[in-house]
Image (cartoon, rainbow, N blue to C red; front, side, top):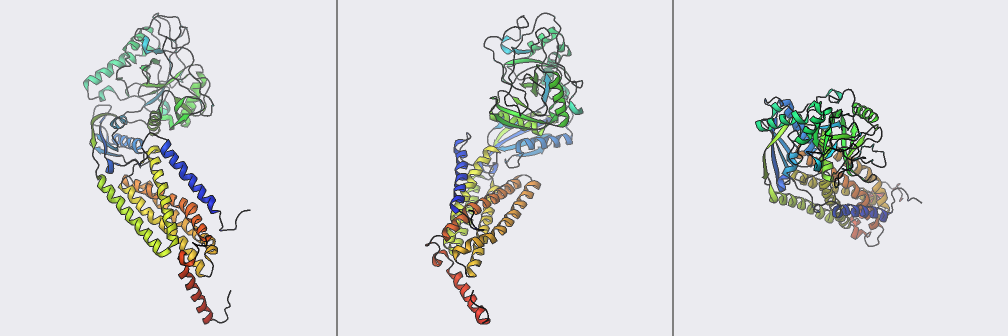
Length: 590
């Protein structure tokens, strides 16, 4: 039978909280590769600063609108949640990115255009096999029959193209087919009529060579385009052989970010194992509404990137997969094949990219695809390590301030509430344990970095938590003052205090949410910690403080007026009622 209103089973509530803490710390110690400590911000641990110099398509100074858009996209990539502690500052034609830690290569990768294209893999007309050529047989593939077996020792990347609802991920079928020396006619898959342009009218042409400041780089791009994006690659075996021979997978691709979507492309896969002959792009990344990473537990494909298309993109993808069942489609990022799965059925709706992804690479790819391609190309002109702007002494000062504030709250509660003050201390300890675990996990999951504004938010949260205790205890004292015992006052006082606590925390959380939405930079970190602490306060008050007070009210020792701190309140209540009876003799004792 359910307990009466205001009555609870305290052990059950405390058990739920204990389970939450156990789960949190199990995640802290048994997941992730990092240390069980919060990630610190730039002002506390230092970081890395990378300067990216913008290159416009026409070689002229980049337009201000393009720079602003590039800054916004890079900001979303590096600090999409606003709590990673990263900063992006525009300095002329440069964008200076500063982020916690020492991973300069990751920051450098942020400057990649991240142009995703969907291209058909061309097929051999006689065998129907896709031109997926092992690097070990290139650049001079031997003449074989169209049904040649896979070369010894070669492996096909594990890739899939399927709707997310599919329980298993189809694997590529058939062996890679070496190019023929004979002048045979080459066929292609059948992209939609708009295959020579990007979907939805979006300009898909890569930055022109004239926008490259380095003459040697511009010459290399022009030479690579002339051979590897020669329109004759679509039909001429001689042009195909030349393009394959000119593609060196062991070196940095000069066409990375500069390939032309309206022309065919000969390129390598991300693992440098295969060379592909691809047709013109039939869709690009502008048709992706969102991208997320995850682990494929059902299909066994490892880490994957799940794509959600915009309406036009979903239609283009459904039309293409419906017309090209049995063919391969390549997902290229900045001209490099990420995955080239075989289409086993028409796919209506969303899809996924799988391959040799790690958790980090899948997350990075989903991140850049979600926030779009850069309107400009960038060269890294500087990479340096920066020291902490405030340092360990500032963090120690902030922690000292928080410790002093916590100590004052505890002393006040012990002096004013006595035994109830001890319960306040236990509640604050439970709140601190929860906050620490959440900080560590958020540092791993959303790259949350604790900085001084965040520490300030936690110091303010101590007051918010203490305020909840005060409201509950004062409501309970009102009930005792009216003549009720400690035990009977607890449920009635909780019912009255609960609404006030929820209202006060709702206002605090709403203020933090508005500040987080409207603010930028470190202020967002302050708002984030304040809002998070407010939610944790509710959990602690409902699952710890209230049950502990209920247990105390049922204890003979703790419920004694002299020990609980409620004796003076009871005496004041007796005197008040006696004065009322003396003033109005008609009032009877209840």
